[in-house]
Image (cartoon, rainbow, N blue to C red; front, side):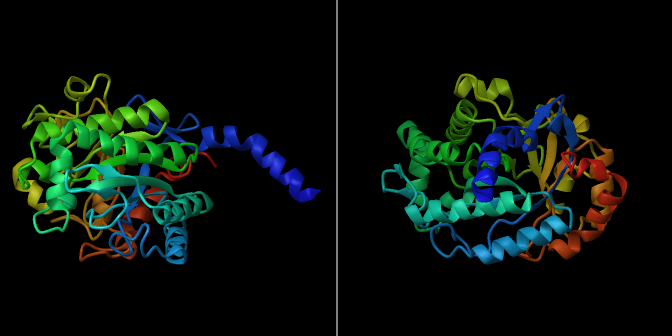
Length: 348
C-alpha cells in the first residue's frame, strides 16, 4: 500500500506545490511563493538543431540540467523550433501553421519531466528569426505566416494553445519567449514590423488566457525597441494592446553583445531606469558567457545586479558557439551564490 499512499499524497499536494514553485511578478520583481528570486539563468538553445521530434537526446539533457543546477543555474532558455525546416510545427506554402508531430510532444514531455526532476525553470522560445531568414528552406512560407492574420492565428490555434494547455500546470514552466530575436524579421527579412508585433500580442493573449506562465520577447537589438528614448517601446502594454486588446508582456528581455555598446551602451553600465524601461522587471536574456568588453563575467554579474536588472542568462551553458559555456560562467555564478544565496533558491 505504500506506493499507492505516496501517489495519493503526491496528488493531494500537487496544486500547493505547483503554486509554491511557480515564478510570478510583483512590484517589478520576480517572486516564488512570496519571496524574491533573481533569475540565475543560461541559454541552452539546442544540443542538436531542430531536435524536438527529431534527434532529442533525453540522457544528455538530463545530465546537463543536473550540471547546471549543481552550478546554481536555476533557469534556462531552449529553442524548441530553431529554423522551421522540420515538421514541428509544420507550415504549408501559404503560411498556415499545422500542429507539431506526436514525436515533438513526446520529446517536449521528456524535457518538462527533466526540468521538474532537476528543478530548472524553462523559458521556451517558440520560434526564431531564423525561420524567415533568407536561404532557409521554408523562409518564404514563414514570411507568409507573419503577413497574414489567418497565418498568425494558425500559429496560435495549432501550436501555442496546445503547448500551453499541455504544460501550463508544470510549475517549472517559467516563460514563453515568443521568438528568438524577432526584431530581425523586420530589420532584415522584409516582414512588416506590425505583423511581427501582432504575433507577439496574439501569443501573449493566448498564454495569459490559459495559464500563469509569463510571456516575454527577447529583443536582439538591446533596448532599441523597448524604450521611448530610442525607437519607441513597441512591447509596452499600450503598443501591444493597440494590436490585440489586453495584450502585454510580463517582463522585458534584452540581449547584449559588444556590437550594441556603441549604439545603446551596455546594460552592465546602465540600469533599466537609465534606458527608460524600468516599469516592468528587466532581464539580460543573452550575453556572452565569457564576459563583455572590458568586463569579466563576474563583473557582468556584479554590475547587472547593482544596476537593478532582475536576472542574467548568459549564452550558452553548453558551448553552442564561441561565446562560452558553463565553465566560463562559473566566476559570475560563484559571486552570486556567495553574495545573494537567498535569491537563488528562495522556496527552499
